[in-house]
Image 1: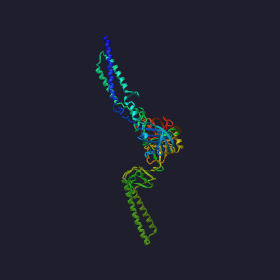
Image 2 (image 1 turned 45 degrees about the vertical axis):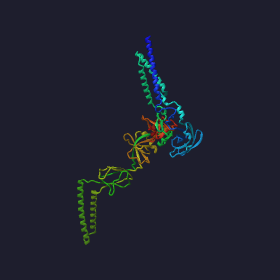
Image 3 (image 1 turned 120 degrees about the horizontal axis):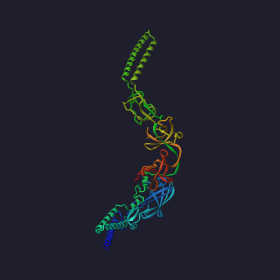
Image 4 (image 1 turned 180 degrees about the horizontal axis):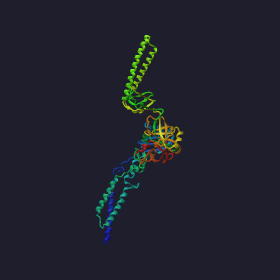
Amino acid sequence: MLSSFSGAARRLAAVLVGLAFLVGAAAFVAPARAHEGHDHGSAQAAPASPTTPRVAVSSDLYEAVGIVRGERLTLYLDRFGSNEPVTDARITVTLGGEGELAAEPGPDGTYVASSPKLDGHGPLEVVLSVTGPPGDDLLIGTLNLPADAATAASAPPAGRMLQIAGRAVPLLYVVAGLALAAGFLLGLAARARRRLVPPAGLTLVAILATTALAFAHEGHDHGEAAALRASGQPAGDRPERLSDGSVFLPKASQRILEVRTVLTKAATAERSTTLIGRVIADPNRSGLVQSITGGRVTAPRGGNLPQLGQEVRRGDVLAVVEAPIIAADRATLAEKVGDIEQQTALAEARLARARRLLATGAGTTVAVSDAELEVEGLRRRGEAVREIRASPEVLRAPVDGVLAASRVVAGQVVAAQDILFQIVDPKSLFVEAVLFHESDMPTLGTDTASATTADAAHGAPLRLKYQGASRALQQQAVTVQFAIQDPPPTLSIGQPVTVVAPSGRPESGIVLPRDAVVRGGNGEPLVWLHAEPERFEPRLVRTEALDAGRVVVRSGLKEGERAVVRGADLVNQIR
């Protein structure tokens, strides 16, 4: 009997401890519900919405977004397919089915309409009548204005709820359940030890546990902003990455980033072959300047050595090379010059004697002529020997063009056949590529204007024209040459390029510009889709190169979707 009474006493003590725990929880939950960020009573106004009230509507022609600030409605009107702003349209706004307002165009490409109804509360029907170059259209949407103060005050405070497994559960229910569970466990512990735990100590433990729960509740993110984040909606008017991976990008930011889109559709294109090449000079419009004998380089008389990028004309003097003479050759030349000078002196003496004899009548005219010819010949021989010893080699430009390379300075000693200058015509450049698959050669030979290349440094596509291919293998590859059509001034000789040439095999798929495909965080290729007027979704795709500026999407996209083709890399960077 005594044992039964003691067990009942222990169970009664456990129930009393649970009730004390519940009372302490209620005492601490009451102030917790009124902590900072929650509704403190009906006298305070309801918290403002994290996002500015807006309406988004679209049709086959237009896409419009209206943002409310006070009594002003700012409208952004774009083309639906390309996302290009429409700034020359006429818009009439009807609010709540009453009256018509003319939206005035603004200097920033927007339209503004004002009405006291925009400062009201609750849902408001908006009808936009648009007349513009793409056509006339009628857009209808609903503008959700903030609720009034009375409605907000009657709503249950957001701070009383906890998010558990994606559902909102009242905080009081959670605390009550924890209190009952704690009382049951304490009762089992008291029964197992065969002794009664002091109720005051258990009550103190319960109060401390409830206090920790109340303070932990302070750190939770709740309210309207948390609900928006949980539902994948933006919590402000700035660009941000949402929880589902999509991007919220306001219309104002879209215009700053110049985001453009296209409607995807299936097309048939010619499959391409990728070749590795480099830029070379046109052999008929370029030239090399070399020295035949070698020697010391000096600037032209009365000028300077030409600078890189300088335009030159055919025949212009670029530099002068003074040929070196070794000691043995110098002695031989000196001996030769001395011998010629001696013979010249003797010939001049014979000429003078022949002229005196002719004057006295003892000589003949023939003897005088022979002496004159001998003297003239010896003088020419002396001048030729002196020129060999002293005259430099003059280097001239072989063609018209621009100086692309200069490898000399004044006073430099160069060897024979060294390349000193390179002259090219910047308007006539070639691309030399290597081809490892000879099966593509017939296609390259018949197609004369469809090959393109991507400038490795600037990514600018270039148009090429097939010129020819070698009949001898170089490192197990065939050399193919293309002429660049209208080369840009930024192109340089020797610059590596990637040539994408047609292979003659047709391919079907969705064709997009290369700029539309970006890399995600894991390195996989993706395309950004314009899912809603201010929301963009990433889509993983599988692509193949079509040419230097386009790709074929094999999987990941469907026809009729709006893919971002300009500004995709900027959208991809939003976090």
